[in-house]
Image 1 (cartoon, rainbow, N blue to C red):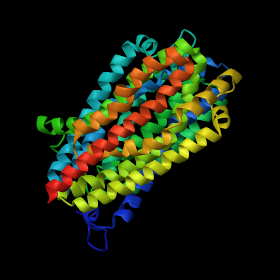
Image 2: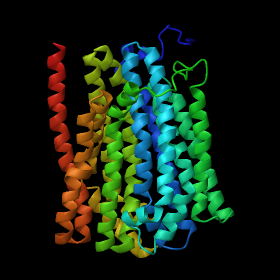
Image 3: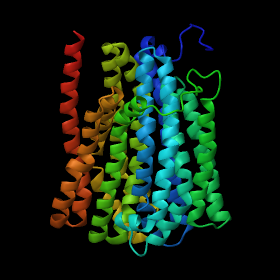
Image 4: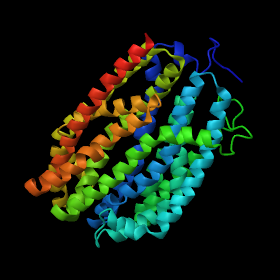
Length: 456
């Protein structure tokens, strides 16, 4: 295996010896850039569509596509996040052959699952969209957008998933380039297809499809290169149940996070339709797109944290493990605090970036002011959940991921709106955030004590 490191330290071995602050910067900065840039895909689509098509219903139409796309993303992350975490752990145990076996099995699983959900969504698209809150006014836009973007969903899964594996195997900067290539193409193609070619909402979907095709080729091609530390090897593509089970077990946490997100989005959209109509559904697009920038930044930090945690946990180095956790949690809280302040101070400016209709803007402003009240705490909860996932503790990661979206959010949506109307829907967000952070803090403290006791 080729090694270009002048100190004769491999890309994975540096996870055990380099200073934690330096490592977290090295792995997190490219990851943050990559995840934020990837989130720009959806932000650009929403902004361009909202201003290119002179119909307020188009924003609501885009909103009801989010849960369906989250389901597709969940199925991709089931394999991609699970394989990345498992690869980090086995590399820490110096088992390179098993890492290659996991890589080969995971790409086969991703393609198989992608083809299955594409077929299912294509057959039952309209009933699914109605279930997720589409009204007669927004359904045509939602249907058109999803029918054109469905072929690209498998490519999206491949890109997202193997970007994580690329980073976990020692190539954080190259993983960033993958995302930059795709986002750059989308920035050019989406406005071109909508404003110049006049293709309407399908133009945004086609732009995303083309961008993802290019990035998927780039990221998969990396693992065929002979100079890559981890690459595809003949004989690793045949599915083996123990490998599949280990991937799915760890990947279950991000999978359920996204599934829970889809379920809660369906409930939110239907509750908004009842208490605020299509304007309220359009307003939640603004909230989702705004907070995505900050959430994806924290997730980028967690992606940078993951290989450091996984490798040192596998190697039994708990001092480095906890130091990484403290740094990542601090950064996470700082990031979401910035988002909370911006959302509170500039809600009108944010809303006008995505929509033109005055009543929708007014609704979005009220939404942002209430929903971001406790958003500053969310960074800690994201890091805590990813800590458990990075150590292979899927059950605890799954539970934490469900606290906000299912355990607390759903009851709040049934309790608060009948008392406060539309403000009650918005109020469910900060209440669920606060309660989930409390639970995360308690569970994390208990786990840290257990690990320290076991290390003695």
